[in-house]
Structures are given as structure tokens and as C-alpha cells.
View (cartoon, rainbow, N blue to C red):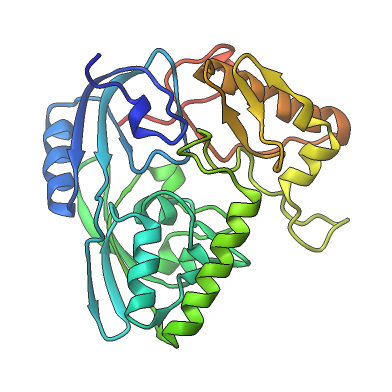
Length: 305
């Protein structure tokens, strides 16, 4: 069937949409969104599909995919201007080969630069917001403007963009000159570590963590891994239909051969419930849900514009 969304997500799940528009460059995205906005057409924007669960029934909106197979970036000294459609790991590799540090810890993180900025992605205590100088945005009215990093309200896995729905057209990063060989070794070590703990979505369809890590409380002076709470609550034993929890990481769901988006949705709900019953607090979901799901009242979907 045309416009199926499953092939565009790392979960390999999702039904059809009204129409699918593919954009690579900031100019292409601006043009597409301007037309949709002018005609008051509901749309939703996706990138690499690595943090996304799409309903089996699909999405009753136009889906705009902002994604480029090759890095779209310009480098001047230590400043990198990069399209939001660029795959984050491609940015990392290109920066290392130019002797620029600041994003190496993002090695192996799936998704696009735009998505990474929206969610302030990172690892090992560092995040992309640390090196962002400014971003070119487009809002739901079609206005285009540039904002400085300190205007984006960055926090752990957060930015204001998650609430406003502004789109990252491009970003300006300020990196620092460093030793290429040392960065290559750091990247190799990070990728080895990720392979030990995380599945390869190409052979075991999945997304990243289902829930955000837990912020420090009066009882704990540091952020605590959601996976620890899930493991202690017995989440690794849970399974719904063709969806099950990854054997090496209690915060990751794997889609089996006959798995459906509803299976994943229900399993995520049961995982959260297990932690609530065991520890008395709610985990905060990190993954985006698009379209209708069973018990959808408990699962707000991503907004359409």
C-alpha cells in the first residue's frame, strides 16, 4: 500500500498516511511546509524514525520526512552549519575527519541532527545543546527565524521545541580542534560499548529507550537509569504478542516477527505500570506516539499542525 510508514521507522511498524512528502534540504522543507500551512493541511514531521512508534492504523495527516542520506554541512574553521535532515552519526564522523571535537559522544546515536536538538540528545554526561550556537527554525505559521542556543530551554533530553513544535531547519555548532586519532579511538570505544548493550535495529527492530532516565531526587544526587528501575520491577519478563523486552536492557522493546504497534504500546504501558507498582512513581515516556492506539486515552499522540 502506498505511503506506508513502517519502512521509515527503526521499529518497522506503522500503517499509511494521507500523503508522504520527502525533503532533504532546508529550502525543500520550507517550501513543502509553506504549502501545507497555506492550505491549512494537517501534517506531522518525522526524521530518521528512530524514536517513533506509528499506529498500525496509520496517521490521518500528511507526513513530511526531513531526512538526508549524506551529510549536508558547511565547515568554516571550528563552526559547522548543518541541515537538520543530516543523520547525527554522519555529522559525528564528518567532524572527526575534520579534526573537530564536541559531538564524538553522540557516536552511534540514531536519528537526525534536527531530532537530536529537539530532544537534546547525548551520552556520557554531554548533549548536543552544549555545542549548539544557534538554530534556524520554522514555526507552525510559516515564519522562519534564527535563535540562539540559550533561547531553546535545554535540559536533560528536553528543549522548548518539544512543546512549541518549531522545526529545526538547520543548526550552527561551535566545535573545537582536536586530535583525529584520539577521537577515532574514542568513537570506536563508544560504538563497541553500544553494541554490547543495544540491539542492532536492522536485525532486531526497535527504537531507543522507551522511558527517560529519572532526574535526581532528595534521595539521590545523580540521574538514575530508568532501565534499573524497570529491571528491578521485573520488566524483562514482560511480553505482549510479538513485542518483548530486550534481554540485555530493560528499557528497550524488540519487535518480533509478528509484533504490532499495539503490542509495543501495551507492553510500554505494562512496563510503566510495573515501576509505578514497585516504586510508586511514574516513568516519563521518551518515545513519540503517532496515530490511534488501544487505550489511547493513556497515550497522547504527537501533535499535528
